Length: 152
Image (cartoon, rainbow, N blue to C red; front, side, top):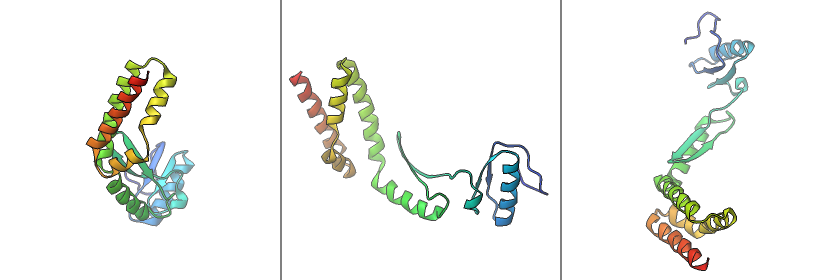
């Protein structure tokens, strides 16, 4: 809905996003007076909440906020994180999700499952994923799972 002539319909959540700082402030004041939560793209001091920049890779979501201090800086961080945490992270997590279900089905003892799952992940594995060496990372985990089964 468009903000005109000082009237604002009743909403619970309001985004003030015009190109006018003054208009956004007026809308924010009116919305808050009506009990709405407000986000203003031009006036961080008018915000009740901030919308983070988000990097999503499959089920992985990384949120970045500067609390309104500099959305542009949050955007730079988002770009950097999107490069670092490439699509392979989402793919690998999807594979881990399936593996976890298999482990749950094969191991009824929750303590043993927890130990096994935590023992699968380490800095070396993380480095493989960062380098997009997903096949090697999966092989490493398969080897650890297989080794744990022979110990049981």
